Length: 178
Image (cartoon, rainbow, N blue to C red; front, side, top):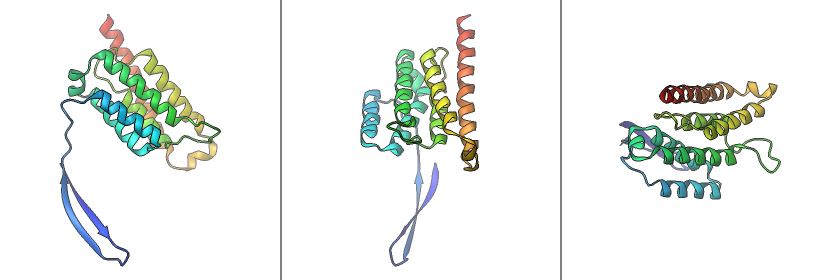
């Protein structure tokens, strides 16, 4: 539960304040088809902010106890692979663009969230390769001058977290297989 304060102001400088509480709970069940349709719609519209929020929410759900109990491992694997593919379409420059349509720290944070898993074997070779490809694209986007922008530390932390998640998943999968 979070207590927030809203401020509404007009062109004349008058302000009105209101406090409200925000309760956020994870749903017990999600319709993955509807969520994926919504994510696809955001891509078609070019609404990257909502796209990021929906991808992050679905990835978090897949790793949650509710997501693990509701979603088969095969479906969770498929969802992760699909979300990484969709992220790559937004994260990689296309059509001669010089940079991603998403800030690099956001791409790295989503990669980290998408590689968080509760079940051994859920992070497949395809997920590993897609994640490493995204992280490679991030590192390729930086040059010597971009390190003064201040965003590199959060990008490095999130990208390192994604790589750590991949290594942990590999270790857990190997341990579960033996």
